[in-house]
Image (tube, rainbow over all chains, first blue to last red; front, side, top):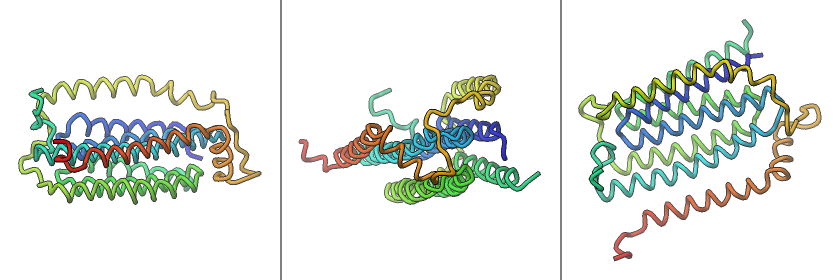
Length: 100
Length: 174
């Protein structure tokens, strides 16, 4: 039986790796990929809690999270494609359409 | 050292390395493929956590739908590899400060998080002697969480409609 702490530490590690990508990358697609990595860290945490307490709630939250991730990827990627069609750029520091 | 811990350590190491390589790789196609490696390992991790159904959902939805969508977009908008090694945006020192704040906060609260597990009371308990994991999930999904299940359906519908609406022909507006 693997201790519960290991799952928490793995989840925190994956969340920090995803946060590294969100904070430092300038490619918008890789930024969305990093968001997926952060959401996978949450999935591990909820499934681990649910496994160790013999409770179904965590598994159901994982089910909802996977649906949310699919919706988020669809909307985010359509926004990236729209931005590319309009500006021909996908790098976050080159997009200054609103002079921001 | 028994097999459970060995398998867990292999999965943890593979997931950490592949996600780190996905974050630092210059080519977006390589990044998406490294995330695919991470997703498959995570599916097996969900199997070791006792849920076969979530393993199947993880492979079908993430590896089959979401990552294929990412690859499709990467090929469609014809991304070049970044010529310069300039993956770091400007003002990266500000991002470094935010990252270090998150690291410090997480490892300060790690003892709190790991001490949390024995204190949970199972709200919707499952008894694996009476039914499989999928049976218990389906039972509670369609009774306690029926409203949330409808909500996630509406969210997926809105996401599809939003994607179609955003990418329609732009000259219809003018």
